[in-house]
Length: 134
Image (tube, rainbow, N blue to C red; front, side, top):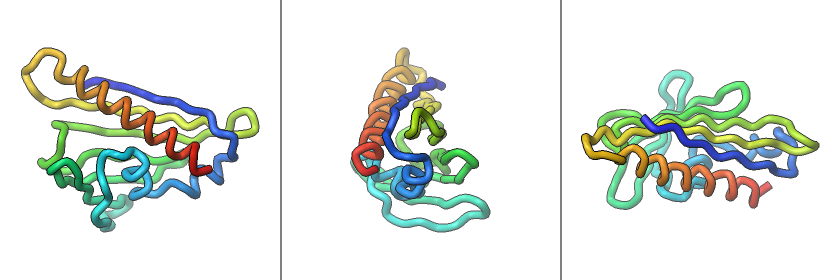
């Protein structure tokens, strides 16, 4: 597995940032997939996403300081993917941080590095889009 992260300051309080975030908003802000449907599964929301010829589920759970989501089931672009997005107060605004662990599960050298590079771009786009909307 490869771990990647992105961080961004926004000049808005954490409460304003958290109001923008939801299971479907996280997917839309990343920009690679579109949320097709949602359903509840215990304390999590399962978001079915589609794009680029793929359709798969993400299991999203709200945490005390943000969200945690992971690729669920056998379908999806990765062998495994989990992401944590946090929102914390900082300098009269908020510090957004996204950390993702990703694996393609392929016996090809550098496969997870390439997956991490792609994933880091999605995390940066997520944080940029949230910052644009607050």
